[in-house]
Image 1 (cartoon, helix red, strand yellow):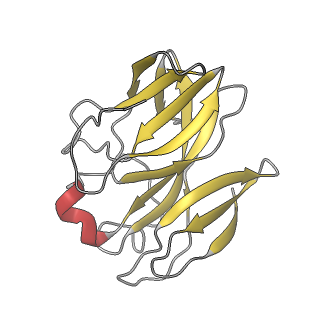
Image 2 (cartoon, rainbow, N blue to C red):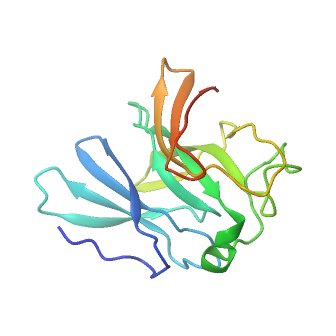
Length: 173
């Protein structure tokens, strides 16, 4: 299946894939309000014969991976921003609550896991749960978190790509 990109942004694609309720879902990584005027996810039948668009919330920064979703339609996504990508992703004001803005921000990078929910043919930010911020030091480089799994229902294991080095990290919700 060839999947058309909603917008053409340097090196951006559908980076996240998961299965829920007999469908395969893919999420485009760039959904900020200034770069993607109509954010969508794709819902694909398991026989790969139908592909349909479903609404996706405008969420600043990149969605680099998602966890599996539970029976109630709840899952988690890595929401990441590297300051060097500002010209590509054009970040706008962030609507997600941030208690760690002094180190998790556009200037130093954003590294967090955000809650998502599927309901009424839409994937959206789940306001009933808090984001999980990845503890980081105030520095100019960020870890490019690219993989996530939920672990024992109350924690995550995440992994970086090779920048600045490959790391696994265990986080509690």
